[in-house]
Image (cartoon, rainbow, N blue to C red; front, side):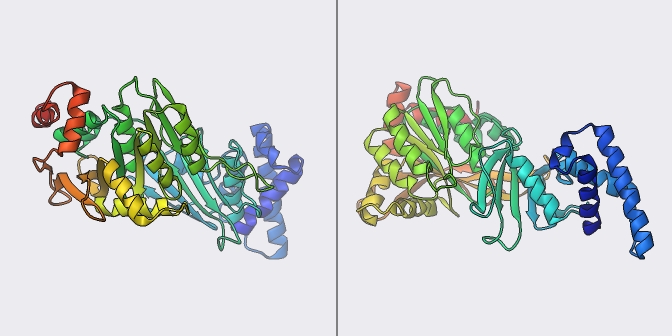
Length: 422
């Protein structure tokens, strides 16, 4: 069927002018051309003794859909329960809201899927070709992130299309969903009221970006926020501030704007808080400059726990290749970072019917007297399915800064204690 679909498609394109622009033609004309192509294929197959199409109408519809829409993937994009779509050559699979990986029943070819990627990239400034075999881009009007690779980097076309299921959410709404509790939401709201430095950690798909958006929504409107991302995912409206996105190199290798360049650039724009959507490399070193400039920052990092996130930030900063030691970078982050908020996927939410993503720990970073990091848990879950428990701790350094922002001594502790009633 795969070879037949390609042959029929080529016949349709030849009938309509020999270009993929045929997808923009009159739908009735296109459908008529596809019908003729299918009939011709059946006649040729019968004369040559080849297998006939089992369902000619399905073959026709498949070709029409590939030329006018996003092919077989269109049916997945029309569903609200599909979070991620994966393409490996001719195979298409998807992750639904329950976290189960399922295969697409409708058959596809690698050529069809490659055209799908090209259609998605047509609305962006990114390209996928031999000279640039890796690409990341915002697609579908900013509603999804496309990550794709082709040979020689990959054995075959390899694509992940991640939909932004949650566009904007508040900490209170996350508390209502059970991701954290009212006390933790109150605590984080108070911490975001001043130029705090917070890292959100977790595995891929754990909900880091959603929590990051909720934290941003709690930033005071008078604060200037400069958000830097490799591929734009955040969509929280700012009263004062802007979003910035990296740019890949041009065909001649020039013109690249990296995440590190962006962070360095926005430092000159008087930010109250710098946001880095995902710290993975040398941009972490620029966050140490933000500390010296008195800026707050907010970032995400891949890690399996809050303590591991601290070491991941240090390792990323060392990738900058500057003439600094690991010990110096550790001391900077130890003295500057206020909190690490760790999130995890803990199974399926039986009540809501989706993957359960929860905050499992909120840990304060305490200035260390020796090398390394000293952490003090503020909120913890004793069990992934258990409640988020306040340890009764409010770190002195954080409490003093919060009290100044709130305008009253003991204000942070009083807010947390009263949070359960809000």
